[in-house]
Image 1 (tube, rainbow, N blue to C red):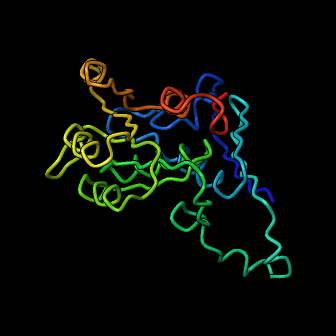
Image 2 (image 1 turned 90 degrees about the horizontal axis):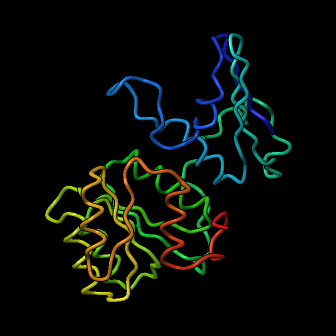
Length: 226
């Protein structure tokens, strides 16, 4: 099934079109947009085993097409019934097999957290996404299988990302950690840690996330890394 929406605007230049689905990419002024809308759409469609495409003719039209697999369950349903189905969201999707590698995402911004979740799941991982350090530590204390923890260094609460990393490794010494921040100077601190921590400069994209995970677990372990 294809859902396509076209506008009657001025079109989109190729240099913008090539980055349209990247998280945090926006052509709006600072403070006017987050650049997360289309990346979230792409993530939701991917989790439904579909894909998205954008086609544009400068000066004429832009068309966004969402390709979704047909649901046999609703094959005989009428169109009005289909139209009332809720959109697919990461939290409502079918749980991935527990044997899949898992990434624990710790991010207090809900939009960034869902974007990170969508990116990581398209790489073939299952994700556990939480908003604060204490929830993350609770998951680790319960010995929930986690292969990698991706934490924002500036999370709010009684612990920041550095403190969370130290506490988490006190519980699970072999835990692999990737840290993220919008402050590039933090990359030097991450490199000087023992052992060094892979660093993601925010805003990051799917290629950068894949690269950091590859550094930790090696190539050939996830979809789309090689």
